Image 1 (cartoon, each protein chain N blue to C red):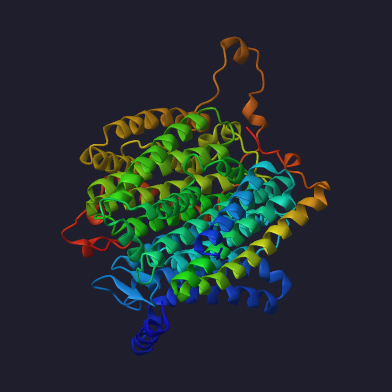
Image 2 (tube, rainbow over the protein chains, first blue to last red; image 1 turned 45 degrees about the vertical axis):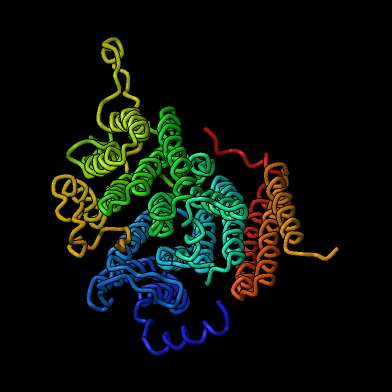
Length: 532
Length: 101
């Protein structure tokens, strides 16, 4: 951007009141700051209960207001502040991430009181990170994307290391810090190479996503374009790190295990979904960028195949449920990447809807499972084994039922939303004729049933014992396990709503799935922007 | 011999690879953090060079953001490392390997 181009853009910015499109982000930052002020004002005894309540009410209020006409409805995609691209589906995307933060906040209300920890800062950092995610997913400019991504990542370092009294948590924070910082540095170098390649070729505004894509419009790459290809590869590495795709997944099991359960849920859902939205935003206009597609389709296919295989096979031997959720999350990233590859190959809008639906189903089921996990956990939740779930259905039918629904959806069993999500992704793969990836995907699903159902079996059935054992009148092992605390009314409401949503979305998809001819009809929870 | 864009880029690439391989090979946590800084500064050098040789302003502007971000990252990173050091009196990466299968 040069001096003569800055002035007109500032002028249009001043003339059109674009701040109105930023109010959800501003409201979230104000909420976070307000919480910090509130902590100082309130009497010390009330802080622990009031601050989380205010935070949750704030998230809910912002989430509801985003869907009202307070957020201007857009007929077409719109560029604001020269760095953000809003689409007609933006309110839906906002709602997805705000709902995810609301649920994380709810889980931390369950988990944090067990620890001797300050509570306000958790919610404040959570709302800052949410605001940064909302900026990140609409960034249309590498500078904006980098700064927003770093805000998210640095906030997540704090959230991962929040229980700083526990050695395991600190270790997880260290691992996340080192791998995260390395991936940011690679992303930055990639951006710089892309910028350099664009600037040398004389492209105007070489930090813009669409301007960068002009580099790849020619069928034949020139000699200088190796710079740009290196840039793409480095940027892809950083995005794959966010997604937790193999081979950038090494941090996933350790960090998921060491972090507090709400943070783990946030990493599993919001951070991963943000990575996918960023990836799709970058690739949105890449259909005529032939040389980029030639590079990216094999690379992304490889990442998808490795993620599905490694995630599922790695999770097979896990007994620790948090590591299991982490590794199975790697495989879910693989299925989503399969959808991205299909989208890149054919470019049908319906494939974006498939990815969005999968993310939505994944979010609902994950929060249901993590919700049960935070109720079953004791004050140290890093070493939660499958054995801790023995007979959960008998001890607490409600938690057991929610767990079964959530796991069933993650495994992709028919009446749940996860089945439809997987089905849609696989249909996309067939349409794009990615048969070998499809085969790997189906193999992965079959493998995943083993470990999800192993967990379910632990929760439902009595451990098998021979007749001599039972006749000798031994005390059954599970009676030694403490019964989980009885969930409160609010917990029942939230977890019940999640389980019900999983089942309902499995039975009725309505207009959520695909109606490319009429995208405005899509219900507000679809989570991928769409600009055609 | 006059110094051109390529020389700057070679320096940047060297700095980046020193940082990258340092991340892979070194065991001291503080040194690892310094390697990350090295990688970020490599990007800064390349960015300024590109910006200077193509007369585009936004590359030079980007640098300020990178400096800010790097400072924030180090602040949080050092806080984590200090609280780890308080508990174990060690900065070696291999001492922090309790989370495993």
